[in-house]
Image 1 (cartoon, rainbow, N blue to C red):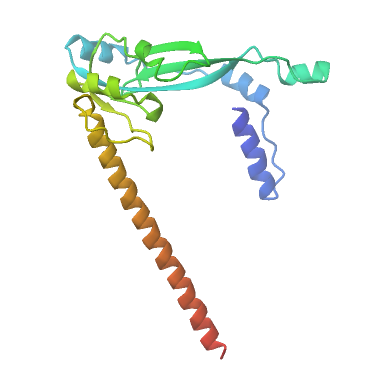
Image 2 (cartoon, rainbow, N blue to C red):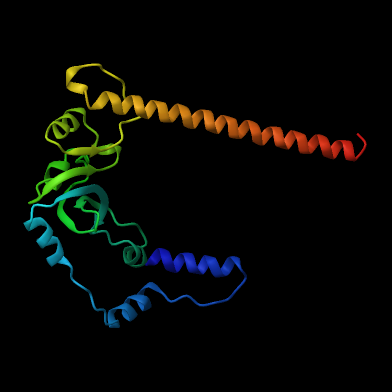
Length: 211
């Protein structure tokens, strides 16, 4: 909400308009008085899971800060607060944005290390979707052998091992390299066409001026 107020102040200022933007406190007070009717759909999820329907899990994490007295600390003491306590929130949700598992860990815990807690769900999982921070050859191979499809991109420096234990990993790396090569060639061709067009326009302009 603070970002929204800051964005709107800058938005009006860049257009030369003197329009007041409600403060964070005012917006919070107004939102508190709103009467919202939240429609609960948890029974739909329960019905799906009770029938054994498989779900796709999307996992991710985000850092959170706790206990920092920032603005009021500066105003009262004239200096920044000493220590900021950081934690990491791990979440696993399905395609309908239902939260199936969550965990809060120390900020030094990697995404891959926090993945076990996110997969402890009472449901049949057919697919796990995550970013490259969760990539693991061993884990991906185990999931693939169990019929779970891991949709996690390999890192850019990944190599092909040609080993029995990397039957899932190797095709991913080959496909990733092929796509990267195709993107590079396409970008090169686009840049070449762009500069050729600019040179052609410059030559035409010079000819028109009689140079």
